[in-house]
Every structure is written in C-alpha cells, then in structure tokens.
Length: 302
Image 1: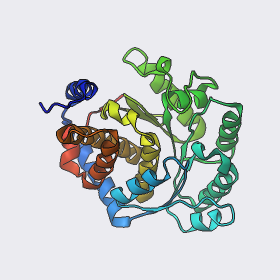
Image 2 (image 1 turned 30 degrees about the vertical axis):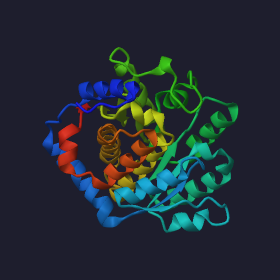
Image 3 (image 1 turned 135 degrees about the vertical axis):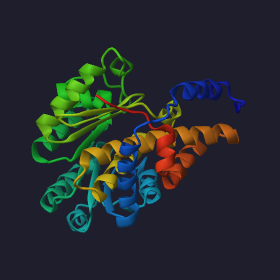
C-alpha cells in the first residue's frame, strides 16, 4: 500500500480501500458507456451560470468530458446564448445573477433543452429560500442536484444546513436511507425533475425508481467545487442524451465518484495534496472509459 507523509491521507486511503467494490452489472455499465460516448461525439454546448469560485473548474470538467462550455451570465445576452445551447446549468451560488437565471431558464424551457438546478445553500437564508420557491414555481428542471441538506430544504421546507455544506445531522445512513429515497421520489413527483443527492452516499431518483451509489472519496469534500462540477457534468450527460435523463444523471454521478477514487489513488502515489487531487479529478474524467467504470462502480437499485 502506498503511504503518504501526511497521516490524515493514510487514514483516508484506508477508508477508500474499504469502499472499493467491483460492479457486476456489465449491462448497466455498457449503457453508461454509450452515454459518455455521446457526450464526446456530440460535444454539446452547455451554458453555466455559476459562482465565481468554481467557474473555471466547471468549464474544465465540461471540456474533460467532451462537452463545450459557455459561462455567459449577462442579462443582455443570456437568452441568445441559451438559444444556441444544448443544456443550461443554474447554480444558486451566483445568487446575484438571479435575473439572468430566470431569463435563461425561461428560454431553455422554450427550447426544450435540459436545465439543471444546483440550489447551493438552500435553507441558509430567506433570500435563497425565496429564490428557490420562485424557480420551482416557474421553471421546469430536468434535474435538481444538491447535498442532502439542500434537497431536504426544498422537499420539506426546513433543514439543518451548514452554509454550502451538508449538516452532519442530515447525513445519509443505512438507518435513514429509505426515508431519504422516499423524500427524493416525492420531490421528483412534485417537480417533475430527477433528484440527485450527493454525499458519502449518493441517491438518484425519479418518482418511480432510485439508484444508491457508493463511489467517491472523502477528499472530494476538501476541495471547492466538487458539487458544482458534478452538476455541470450531469448537464453535459443529459444534453447529449436528452431522452435518458435519469440514466444520464446516474452515469454522471458514478463518473464523478469513480474519478474521485482514481484521483485519490494518484494523489497518494505522487505524495501530493488537495490542489493536485482537483487536477487529477479532472484528468480522470477525461480518461474514463467503460472498463474503468466496471472496475469500481458501486450502484444498487433501490
């Protein structure tokens, strides 16, 4: 086992070994492979309205996946840009761009292209809660992706959110997983959106079905933007496969988790840290193929 000079990294490595499980459902993996290939073949243009902290990472994750990024947010052009795009991401971290988000989502719905919503820090302030309500009342989202606290805030109107991070009290466990799936399915039925909850355990659900995904690594929580990058990746996959939104969302979540595991292994092998991990994460998104997915993907139908 490779060792790092940093004892915390060694502890995380041991955690990763326990979590690594080989997927045995090759049929599902091949389905995901087709989804990924379509992104590279079609190179969909994705307009992303996100916060300034993660805009560069979101653009790079799109390029790594084979999509084409556009980060237009000026209200004088967003409708024009969306009209030539194949997908749209709106991220509540860019809360000051709420008017641009409303204009762009209206145009995207008119164009019938996938719209992915990342309700960053939903439940943390009255302003964010009011904007979430406005968006959900006026926009048809293909996918809503958030951490458990953010999704809980949308579904139940309350949560114990910790800013942009999920609260420890909301963590998904074996004891509450059935309740979380029920909540996600209910929110999906209410909104017509696929619900993606990311964390140590990921849940992807619509109103009828759910996948539990247990890939990833704790180091993903030590860099800014891993959730924002996932939301953007989901949009790329959905834009290239607009008739397979549920499967595309699950494929993107698996991709991000598996690449996180590979990136952590590379970080250990090179005795580097979190900044390098972020770069390796993007590297592996660009390198991922069906065999790499098969080696590590852990997905359960719930």
